[in-house]
Length: 92
Image (cartoon, rainbow, N blue to C red; front, top):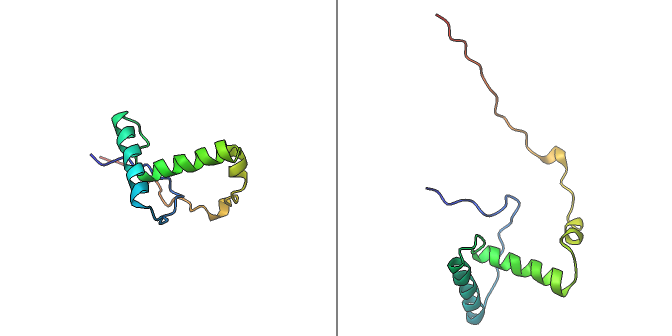
């Protein structure tokens, strides 16, 4: 059975550098989340949760305030599906 995709389609790959202590902290959080059987236990999800928590608790911003800073996606840039249905006529 394939693993469920947990990264959004609009996510972009970035590189971060961690000290050995920071890598250890990330591993501890990951292990504890796995023990609690939480869904968000990957390193990407842990860092994302930490960033959101920092902005909401330390910077006192709501998620809505942050999302208003994002550029709006134009609908004309969204690719249209090329799937079509072909009906077949079964005759005698």
